[in-house]
Amino acid sequence: MEFYADRKYRNLPVVVLAGRPTVGKSTLFNRLLRKRRAITDPAPGVTRDAVGADTFIAGKPVRLIDTGGFKLDRDELPDPLDDLVVERTLETLKNADLIILILAAGELTAEDEEFIELLRPLRERLLVAVNKTEGGRREEDAWNLLSFGFDRVYCISAEHGDHIGDLEEAIAGRLDFSRVTSGDAEKRPVRIAILGKPNTGKSTLSNRLTAKTASIVSDVPGTTRDVVEGSFVFKDRLFQVLDTAGIRRKTRVTENIEYYSVNRAIKSIEDADIVFLVIDAQEGFSEQDKKISALVHDRGRGIVFVLNKWDLMPELKNTFAAVSDRIRFFFGKMEFVPILPVSAAAGTGVEKLLQTALRIYRQLNRHTDTAVLNKALEKWLEEYPPPTGPQTRFKIKYAVQTGDNPVHFVFFASRPRAVSEAYTAYLRNRIRKDLGYSLIPIGVEIRPSAGSGPGRS
Image 1 (cartoon, one colour):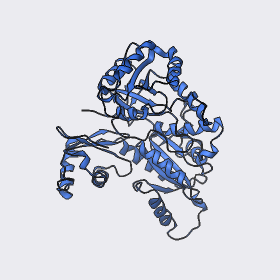
Image 2 (tube, one colour):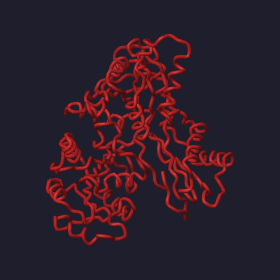
Image 3 (cartoon, one colour):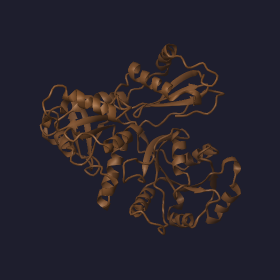
Image 4 (cartoon, one colour):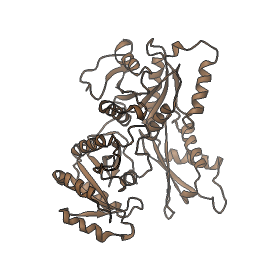
């Protein structure tokens, strides 16, 4: 049985995927995660930043990082951010426990050769994968790479899955897992990232949580200021707050310092359990808010829409209901996300916000026993049977929860590709309604049961 890493692990070895653009890094990243995931951040200005996720490789937990395409060629209209992407990639590589250099079979370029030379000092931490060799094509070209001094190259197809198992065994065999530890979710701090556009009141909310409300705050020494902005205790639970720079439109992300501020904001999503998306109640929400929420959702983090500066809104009947309805319409499939009116400056609504965060955290770390899940599945299939047409029929055999925080379920079906998006949405909604996951995003994957065809997410 395969399980996804569930963020309970600490000190994971770091595996970094590197290579020039178009060699298949993103495809291999998804393949090793065993699920489809947007790995280029949709927030403008940061689409080529390194993106990471915890997963299991050959049964061992690792931190997997995909880097931006490494462009050394600046001849044709260079992007002003190219140098920053290269700098960020080099920084990531230096901190890696293992680097997977991805090359495309039969397409070795001068840029590849220069990159190989650049990585020579890191040779002891380097493993080479030659992609796009499905069915054995161009493998003879791949062996020519041994002339660069590599002990071995791994011929794979990230798209089709050829020899991925061999690559995973090689990765696990090169890593040290002696420092990996796990911890109880009830004893870990609840990590909150505060995101939103500039000037929505993020820092005011952070200050309110960590310094200005004595009834719910106590100082916790030892906080690392460059990672965590502050800590506080609420209802006997330790919280850590990651305050972030406002995420601006791409046209405004021009200076290095702001570029890296945006990167830190995106990284804070990876480090957080829950995101408070702060929206100025007077200005309303924007397309940028929608992109941020999609980024949070894709990573399976909890999220709360925080309508800040609510004390400045006109006191009209049904104002909150009207604003909530607009948000539900604007954000589409985010109907499960709590919407809370708050005044960070005055402190109103903050206690309810934290009570909601605790509920979300408990749901993120909830795990449903397989027997309980499949008993519920029997009921769901009885109440809404799968279609019976010759092209649309399928049978769902059983289900398991493969991860928590982020929460992920796998359903095993006789014909996975016949399972429609509508039926997948039905299963997701029943999980939320019947199993206690009403406030969080849920990953649902359809896999083939024994003897079935290929699956999908």
